[in-house]
Amino acid sequence: MKSRVLLLEDDLSLSQTIIDYLEDEGFEAIPVYDADEAQAIIYEKKFDIFLFDVNVPVLNGFELLKLIRKQNNLTPCIFITSLNSMNNLEEGFSSGCDDYIRKPFALKELLLRVQTILKKEFSKKHTIISFYKDFTFDTRSNELKENKILVDLHYKELKLLKLFLQCEDELVSHNKIYNYLWDYDEQHSNSSLRTYIKNLRKILGKEKIVSLKKLGYRFISK
Image (tube, rainbow, N blue to C red):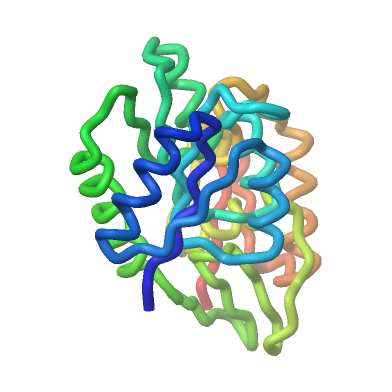
């Protein structure tokens, strides 16, 4: 099965060049030209990777990816852009991208970056963690299920659970949680964290998440 790529690029000539190249390399490549088109097709289809220009109509690529990530869509994304300052780079990664390539670039370089990310994603694909009674957590889609039924949780609650599962039975400090849950341009909130913990305990059981005063939390695996 071909890997499916979504390309958001409003330069028609460059878009066609990239699409033709990726198709020649064995990908299924679909072009869109503004953020609305991108959101519509992401709703309809699943993609293996996004390639987003930043300065595009309707909504810039950074803001678009932030919206996508808030919808729990973790499809890897590479920004392809002429923006080249360190601030731009920081904003790109803080919005949730996996790589950032500055224009102009060689098509071969883009291909190598795409292939590298897809290899990593393939190794992570369908990683299902079974734990505590009949709970499962999909580390790729960030979905929690109980008895195969999807559990509705806030995005940051799912991220927090993912962190706990990566650090079972270990002390997870407040600072580590803040850095994991909140982007650099967001203000972390202790009250919000307490709410996330409370909601996870309601579902998993109070005994599963132990509070260690002034230190952090420990997720009990058994």
